[in-house]
Image 1 (cartoon, rainbow, N blue to C red):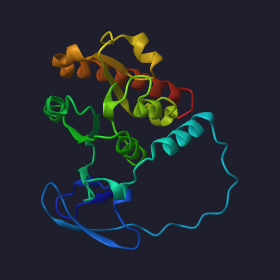
Image 2: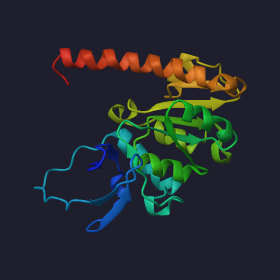
Image 3: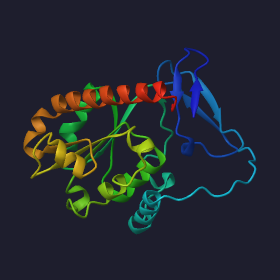
Image 4: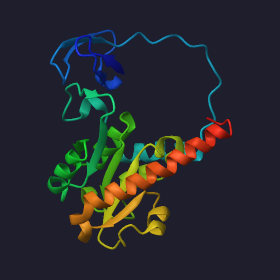
Length: 227
């Protein structure tokens, strides 16, 4: 939900799931500290439509959610209202072993980091929040590459959702920035743990290349009248 601060004019992003229905919430603008009253509008009644066809990918994601027992917003440790300025980039860090060295780098790159310690929370947050960047270790939450529940959740995502999220997979046997390995695992880039010292440079390079690719992709869709 987007809200304008009536004092400084900043546009704020407030996750819809954080606002209780039929209840006013008072929040502070992170820029000028002005108090803003937010209320979720009542849901409009829609005419019944025939159910959309469920794709194999959607079915796979739903079945995986059931297996992992995905957490909902009310179960997250930080239940306070998260307010981000328009344009703020979100990153989800699924790597407890390296998160202390990763977070300062991401803050320097103007990302708003969120760390998680379990696959159920990671999947729950991705379900309710659109992240620009996800950093995932192959052994996250005591898992392995073949059994990584977060990776299994990401891999069958619909492209309309997936292309908005840049996924970095960290592991001990990867060849850093190997495009074929990344493609095979349905992630944007793979990085060997040994190359963590170069993480910032690798992210800047690969994210820039991805943005350039999708810029051309979007322009092509517009030219073809499909966007």
